[in-house]
Length: 344
Image (cartoon, rainbow, N blue to C red; front, side, top):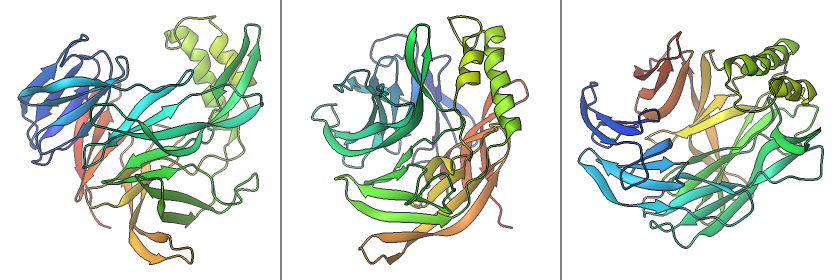
């Protein structure tokens, strides 16, 4: 993640450190370590810039945020409390006035074969208190796996999901559905922008066919799930459980429209086409500012550019014509990379 002065901050989940680098890649500071005390982490899940010289770090194991700078820890950690059975809070980021935007996914079991759960979006004070609900939107597309131990809710493979991003005082929501979306493959998708009171302020809509899900992709997915029993990636449980789930799961006829959205430093929205193969190059559609107001008073955005990024590269931030992210080599070793975009 870039800070205001060009410093790059990296959350190292393996060592539980936050590392700071100069724009040309020289490490200048390392903060943190494993543990539960101030400035320590058990699970670094996200890092956000807060100012020109500080970042917020989300620890999903300890369910708290910490603020650190190259000079060390700033203040005490802030723990997020959300009521609700099985609720899982995840910060989306910080508003300029210090409010913390938090998403809660309850993943509750519903009495339907296939459904979408709900995501609740809250605003909190900087100290984690006074949570106020802002929006409720559809969540991950789920199905109920019925087996000998009961009923287990699971995400639908290649199913629809909701992607979120935070602007200065705005929440961008893409639910991978459009008005009239159905099995016939409606020819448009949309991403909506809301202010922090939940008021819709911008609607971006693009005419595009959702791509079909082919049998080769399904078979590759099933094989990868079976391989978990060999690699141990699936954790504890019967050795054949992941293959059984993959065989029993429902599969959609068409892929979702997109799987990630980001906001660049100029306030433009970047939307990544859904990428079933994570090792393939990615295509991002970039939407410019508001072009006109719709009859209902909601402004609309327009496509300003398209960016193609390398394979095995996960984009995390955009600054001018440069993009920052994590690249993986053939051995899955990760490297922080900056690429400069060139116009065609």
